[in-house]
Amino acid sequence: GIESMSKNFQNRSRRAIFFRGIGYFLAWMIMAGGDLADVLPGVGAAALAAWASLLLLPPDPGTASVRPMALARLFIRFVWGSVVAGVDIARRAFSPAMPLKLGYVVYPVALPPSAARNLFMAVTSLMPGTLPAGSDQSGALIYHCLDVDQPVAQQLQQEETLLVAALGGTLGSAP
Image 1: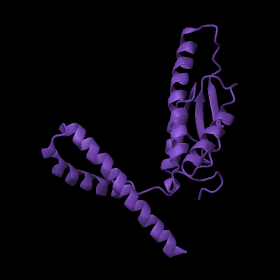
Image 2: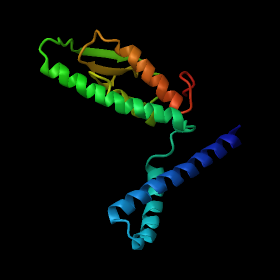
Image 3: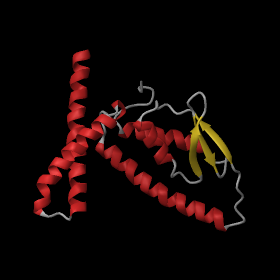
Image 4: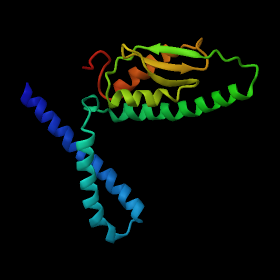
């Protein structure tokens, strides 16, 4: 019930504090040069930064049970997709034989407005020839496409399914 939800939120908050704190501490040590004298101020700065980040950006329920292996697969796909997108755009830019069919595709995203949805838009911005351009009145995402004849909506569906799986959920289970 409510007690288990509260305990789950507390556990996520503790994990968020820990991982954010580690990240901020590592950033501090890199910027400070990694001297032993910088450890104590770094711990203090990391604790304050983690606390402030939780106030400004609380843990997102959509990222409650991240699956590391699925996230790693998504990351590899993201990096590969960025390389493919770069090559595709360069090829289209320098080849007059490749006609462009500019236009917009509307994708009815299943993710509610959240950090997970923002991550989805960031991931899909690297799909070859597509760029998120906002949303319509119904909340569907609008993508600018270099070639509207490509199966953009199907690719977006695949990306959304993979992202939701990496975040530990299933499509249709989002609040």
